[in-house]
Amino acid sequence: MVELIVIAVSSCLVSNVVLSQFLGICSFLGVSTDIKTAAGMGGAVVFVITIASFVASVIDNYILIPLNMVYLETIVFILVIAALVQIVEMFMHKCMESLYSALGIYLPLITTNCAVLGVALTNAQNTYNIIESVVNGFATAFGYLIAIVLLAGIREHIAGNNIPRSFQGVPIVIITASLMSIAFFGFAGLM
Amino acid sequence: MNKYTERIYNGIWKENPLFVLVLGTCPTLAVTTSAMNGAGMGLSTTAVLMLSNALIAVLRNIIPEKLRLPAEIVVVASLVTVCDMLMEGFTPDLYASLGIYIPLIVVNCIILGRAEAYAMKNGPIVSFFDGLGMGLGFTIALVLIGALRELIGAGEIFGFHIMPSFYTPCSIFILAPGAFFVFAALTALQNKLKMPCATNGDGNPEIGCNGNCLTCGFMKPKKDN
View 1 (cartoon, helix red, strand yellow):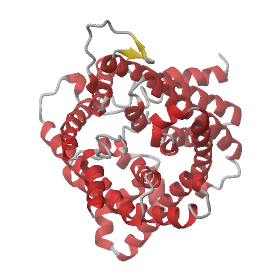
View 2 (view 1 turned 90 degrees about the vertical axis):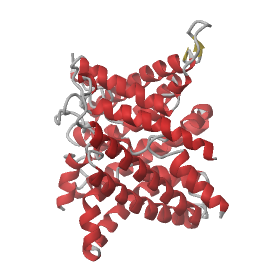
View 3 (view 1 turned 45 degrees about the vertical axis):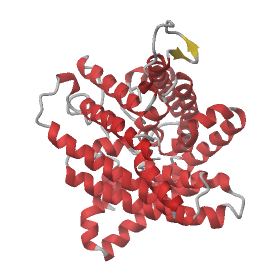
View 4 (view 1 turned 180 degrees about the vertical axis):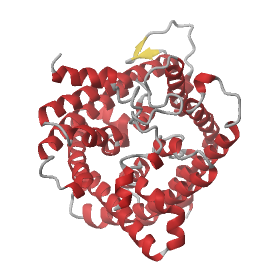
């Protein structure tokens, strides 16, 4: 149990997926213009990464490792994730209409989000079992949700500010991310 | 200038994937802690990009339209796996310091972007040179950013001591916040000098994706299906 909490805290806060591992930067910068959109994207990422890390871990532990085909991990994981996102999208569309209307448009974007493959590969590299993988996946994605919602909140506040011309647009957003990254360094004290 | 050297010039200068198109930002921020890591990442991406462009251009008439993306991903993932195993065998130190970012070359948007935008429409040889140009452009950009961060953050370039002995290295530059800061300063500089760049002003939708997945052209046709 303690191990699971350590995994969760470390992947959610201490080595935050965006602010210290630099995965999923594109959507972090691109889809963080307002809190509502950011929360939708973050929710979809939590949903997909949790399921994907479960499926990838099952495949890794019960198919690839027993058959001694660990070298196929990258190919298998990326295909499984792409197929999984499609299936989740179709399933949501048919059976969970309200959830689909909230998260649906973000789902296709997640296939190419490197955080999903990154988590699956991290789980495999650290030889996590299935429960540890799911906890790590959920916590990592939750860290993404925290980071993107915080950034969106800050962006809503700085939108009306007087920013030097050269820094308007993307540069000030990256500066904000840099300051957030310094702040997240503080969590290193937790471990 | 023939069409092959034109492709290389295009990749290194005119449409530099990092400075102009602003693609592949995740590996850029992650591996530019030193010039050496930047060079390793850039060259392995170049190798994958050249071969994936050439292979996809060879296969472009056989791949069915609907299976385009999965087929491209399989080609890229196979090449990345080969690259991953070669690096693990021959450059173990570099492999250890790049870690998970080697297999993540699969989802580097430069590779799928070039496959979609160029290799699916052109012949294998010219696509190979397009990959070479884009890869070298990416490598040069990574080495420049890596050298700058290493110089400020450790006083070294490629591991050689450059700065005078009284200089105290500002080590935050080789940590995570420094990556964001250097990248922000770079885009701000490009704004100031009005260089062609996807992040200039409101972003030019003609070049690069500006990171905004919601308005991405590649995503729209898929959603309609």
